[in-house]
Structures are given as C-alpha cells and as structure tokens.
Image (cartoon, rainbow, N blue to C red; front, top):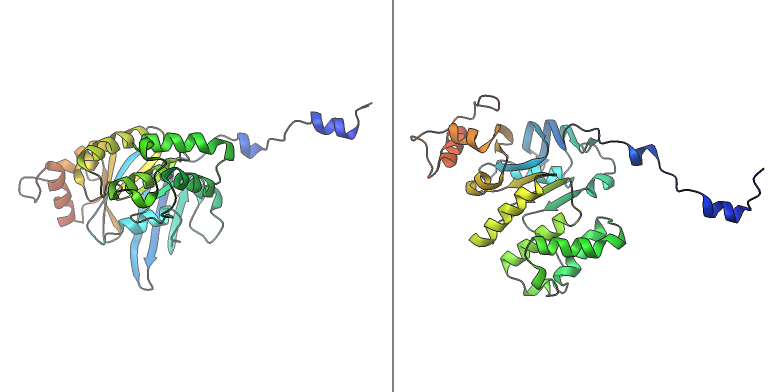
Amino acid sequence: MNLLNPREKRKRTMPVVSRADIAPTTYAWEIRATGLQVRVGRNRMAVDGLDLSLGTGVHGLLGPNGAGKTTLIRALATVLRPAGGELELLGESAGGPGEHRAVRRRIGYLPQEFGYYKRFTVREFVEYMAWLKEMPTADIPAAVQRAVERVGLADRADERMKALSGGMLRRAGIAQAIVNDPPILLLDEPTAGLDPAQRLRFRELLQELGTDACVVVSTHLVEDVAAACTDVVLLAEGRLVFQGTPDELAAAGGPEHVGDSPLERGYSALLADPVRTRGAW
C-alpha cells in the first residue's frame, strides 16, 4: 500500500520522457529535394525540377545571376513554399503548408540582407535572435558569447549595430545564424563586405562548422569554394548542372575555357554545355 500523500508523490515523480525525446536520428540526409519546384512571382519557376541530397559538410552553391541560388536558399530556410516536388529537412517534410516551427529552430539562416534594430548592441541582437529560435533561456548568454567570439566580434559585442562597418554587420549576421549550433546552416553571400583577412578566417570557420553540420554557402567567389567546400552544387536556370568535389569541377574545364583558374574554367565549361549533368564526372 502506498502511504505517500499526493503532494509527496508529486515531488518524487520522475519527469516523463517520450519516445521521440530518445529516438535516434533516422534521416539519411539533412537536406533532400526531389523534383523540387519553387516559383518566384506568378509565372517564373526559379527552381524547376531539382533533385538534390546534401549531408554533413560544406556545400558551395554556384551559378550565374538568376540561376535560382537565392530562391533555393529561401526554400531551404522555409521562407518560400515549394510549388511542386518534395523537400525534406532533417527528415521532416517541408514542402506543404504545415507548421515548420520545430525545424526552423534547428536551422541557421543568413540572407543577403537581414533586418536588425539599429539601437541594439551586437550582443542584444544575437540574444534576440536566439530567443526567436526558442533556445533555452539559461543557455543563451554562453551561446551568444561563443558565437560573437567565433566571428571575431567579442571586442565589439557591446557596440550598437548602427556603429558597425558593413563587414562587421555581416559578421554579426553570421553570429546570429550559428548561435543555436544548427545542424543545417544556410548562408547567402556571407563574404560580401568582408576584407581578405576576414574572408580567410571565415573559410576556417566554415571548415570547422562543416565537421558536424550541413552548411550551404551561396557565393559568386569561386576561390571561397576551392578553399572551404567539400563539394560544389552548380545551378543554371533553376536546374542542377553539376554536383561534385572542387577537383571534379576543375577537371571539367580546359585551357580553351574562360577563367583565371582551373575551377573558373570548369565552371565556364559546364555552363557552356548544360547538357552535362551530375554523375558524368
């Protein structure tokens, strides 16, 4: 017979842990798209029939202006809803009109242009973004400090955002994207405004982040891809033209193609002959 009174029973009750809390990760890819279509405006299909699987590592997203890079990044960030096909993020469907709140908490996203309150300090801005991502309150201060240190802004953490240079603002944007240690990190033109030394440090940070996260970096700078990325995704007119390693991209070109480096010549060769597709290299 249990002689404990109800109040004492509540004190001794262990917290309930659901199966979902202890279930192992079951997804094969952090990002998987099948026949993905994403529309911009009423008529233009900026991403059209894309098949793509991305796992842990740093994936460079290349392509000419209008290729669909930013549209794809925005769809992966659940900002844009797919018009067709399937999109899975961390094993969860992100293609329908349902609630994506849980997966958004596990994504880091830096758009080309991001909003902020000018009177916020860097620390307040990153704290606010951590709060929006519903991080546990007790974890936020240490996570913010680590994030600003990783982007080299520890000495500017208590300065107002409006006082920062363009490059420092970009680094603050990177800090808010990584504050929650996301398994998916989406960066759209992250090196814009960074000086050469800052770009070198950023490449090192990318390599560090890519050891245990799926990092997608949209960029026009082929040298950043060569230095930091484990593989390259090349888009043209919303379709996949190539996916492979930087070395495989370089091997696609020859001296007759435009470019100052093997990677640029491979990039030019593939765009000049879009019939070539992934798996041919």
